[in-house]
Length: 426
Image (cartoon, rainbow, N blue to C red; front, side, top):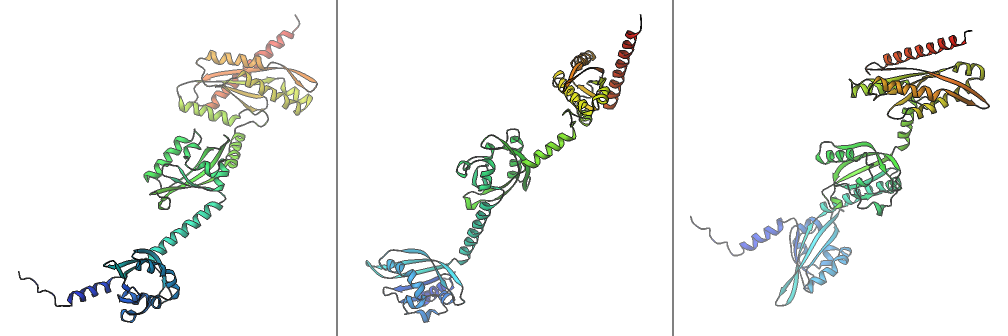
C-alpha cells in the first residue's frame, strides 16, 4: 500500500488553524504587551468580532473595561510566569451573561515570558444548573426552617442531617442535640419494630413513601403521637447518594380524643365499669382465641335497690351504684372483669376458670362483697346481692347472659321463699 504524500508546506498550519476554529472554547494568544496575536472563531460568538478584527488589539479593547478590570490581575500574573485558572463572566453580543472557566498558560522561552495562551470554556449551562440547584436548596431550607410542622432530612441509616425548629419543639431537643442522632432514639419502644420495617420497605423500594402514626418519646420522657410521612430523595447536596425527607405532625390531641371516645363507647358513664358492648366484644375475642375453652359468667342483681330509688331518689341510688362498682372491682381481680348492664344489674366475666367450681367460688366472693351497709349522706341502707352463674362455651354470649340471669332469679326466688317461710308463725 502506497504511503500518502507528505503535506505541502503550510498544510500543517492550515489544519491546526481549522482545528482551533472548530473548538467551542475560546483559544487565543496574547503577547507580553497584552496585544492579541491569535484568536479562534469562538471569539466572534462571544464578542461579535472576527479573529482578524481582534488581531493586534489590546486585551482591554476586546473584552471591555469592566471585564478587563476583573481579569487584569490574572493576565499580569501569567506574564510573570504563573499559570492562572479562574472563573469569569462577560456579556455576549445578545446581552446575555455568559460564564467561563478560563486558563492563562505562560509562553516561557529561554526564561522569558513572551506572552500567554488563553483557553476559555463556556460553562454557562453548568453554572445556571448549579445556581438553580442552590436556589432550590435555599428555598427548601427556608421552607423547612419556617414550616409549622416538624421536618427533617435523614441519612438512609436514619441519622439526622437537618432538622427544623418545629421538630425540635415537638421532641424537646435543640438542633445541636438532634444532630447525629437516629430516629431509633425517639420512637417509642413498642413502636420501634414497626418503624424499622417501614424504613426497610422504603429503602428496598417496596413502597414509594411512608405514612403512619406512631408514638415518640420527648426529651422529658413524655409520649406523643406523631403523623410521619417520609420519602427517599437524591442526597447530593448533603454529600450522600440518597436521603430520607420526613415530615412530622403532632396528632396527640386527636389520638387522645379518639381514645376517649372509644373508652366512652364501651364504658358505663356512672360507674366507670365496662358496658354490655365491651362484654360481648371480650367474650367474642376469647372464643376466637380459644374456641374450645369455656368461660364463666356471673350475673349480679341488688336486692331492695328499687326501694332506695323510690324512697330516697335516684341521686341516692346513683351513690349506691358507684359504691357497688368499687366493691366489685376489689372483689374481681384481673384477668376477670366487671360490667354494668344497666340499672342494678352487673356481670362478672371469668374467662380462665378451669372448672364450674371456680366460677361458683367467685360468685360467692361477689355476693359477700356486695352484701352489707351502704352509706348515703346521713342514711344507711342494708342491701344484699343475688348472684347466678354459668360456665360454658363462649360462642354465644347472649345465651351465657340468659343462663346466668335465669340462675340468678332462681337464687333470688329461693331467698324470697326462705324469707317468707321464716316469717310465718310457728
